[in-house]
Image (cartoon, rainbow, N blue to C red; front, side, top):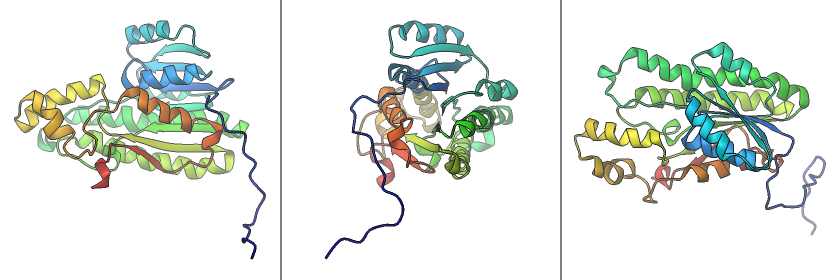
Length: 271
């Protein structure tokens, strides 16, 4: 008996390659001066992309640019505050690849959470990604190819107490990413969320101090008793590990991965 066949043309894949090549592609990475954004900008440039590294930290971008010397691609710093939404949208024009990474965090009970900070978090982490996607899509649609990678979080899938703004922004980003995937599919554009748990970044280091205050525990206990409590793998994930996942999602080989979330949480959500 012969195996049944599926309708439609056969898919002819390129030969597998260990080296993921983004030569000739342009990329924009937000929050690129440190942490996950820095690792993503360097990894995409190492794969041959011309990367625009966006951040409001000019000194951090200068250090990043110096570190990028000698990579296969190029890296251009762009000092930009993402609360300037018009400028954010304009900055994304012409990008083949968009990595929405910039974020901020404040740990407070809802009744004590400053409304102005809640507004700023939602502006930087949800409204700015919308404007960046809006700015990038015309070019992506015109060429029939594009990659949108939204750095979400395990908190885009789960909630934690005292993080109302961050959790709300990440849950919103998940919905935005899925909508972009559905609209972009006919145009060769994918949109995916990457959902790490706690990453070894300055943002997490600040969270440790905030969590210590919120839970009334010593700072040295926060990592093991709070941050990694629900993780099967008892360590922080490194920014470079997240960047490798982002790189793969930006390649032609990832053309069928869209409208979903890639969870890098050490088994947290397996519970």
